[in-house]
Image 1 (cartoon, one colour):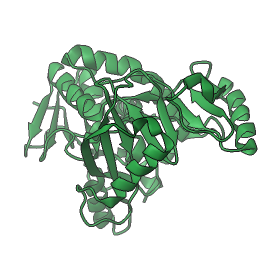
Image 2 (cartoon, rainbow, N blue to C red; image 1 turned 135 degrees about the vertical axis):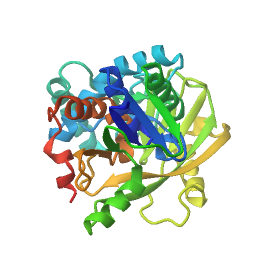
Image 3 (cartoon, one colour; image 1 turned 120 degrees about the vertical axis):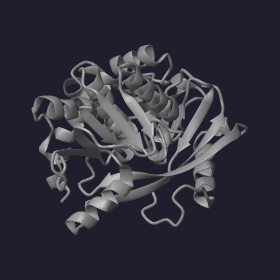
Amino acid sequence: MVDITVKGAGIFGLSVAYACAFRGARVRVIDNKGVAAGASGGLVGALAPHTPENWNAKKAFQFDSLMMAEDLWARVAQLSGQSPGYLRSGRLQPIHDARALELAHARAETAKSLWQGKAEWHVIPAADHAEWAPQSPTGYLIHDTLTARIHPQRATRALADAVIALGGEIVIGTSDIEGHLVEATGYQGLIDLSKKVAKSAGNGVKGQAVLLQFDARTAPQLFADALHIVPHEDGTVAIGSTSEREFDAPDTTDAQLDQVLTRAIAAFPILREAVVLKRWAGVRPRAKSRAPMLGHHPVLANAYIANGGFKIGFGMAPKVGEVMADLILENRDTIPDEFKPEASL
């Protein structure tokens, strides 16, 4: 007997399955293509917060999730015997002009209250980080201590194995639906839902990323020119990504990724001689509201939905699992109104 069947073995589906299994539910995860076969099998893994200002439910949810991440991934590592590559490494960003410098100082003050003293936002001299820093016209950088990193492919594999260690099943292919159904089927799921409700529920946004051989494993992440540069614990650096609303091939790379790499090297010349190890492309699910879509399924009876992670799926995942388990197992609704399906429909 299975209490909960989760369709989709990406980060949201696995996080819901893990949270429910951790509370004692019997879970089965099914996916035709396997664990993290879609956008969750990417390279970048930047768990980056929103700016500490204009606080709202989405930013508060993300902050809570980022604060939960260290304990969750430590438990996953223990259960699975595998490292998910988590590290709260912080992030450096350039400050381009006097106005941006003034704003960065103001955000340092708002972060003190909004981040509850659990993380900090600093303005520091760029010289403090020598070569491992974005080029900054003002000579100053933003350094936040909330940003973390994860290795997407290793983390999803570890999470799947943690579900199994808790007595759950991971089925590659098809299987019977037993108990409550949770649909976490990525961008294709949003397209299918749009057809069922006869209006747009969301779409897919293609992203391309590249992995370099460069050992900066304990260094902070870098962010400049809309690029994430993320050092991983295995001595690689991931760079991403594009945001393509229109695309022909969902899983192939092209000249747009070459441009990403060129921009990254221009911003961070230290990477100029690094060897390219891997190129990746995938399509991320973006709900119409731009927030995750969580809650009762809008069409299917006795079913739930967890979708729309888009660029922040890994950062949101710890709390997504928790609130979905609250709803499914305890009928306790702790999901922000902005995240419920009706916000996108």
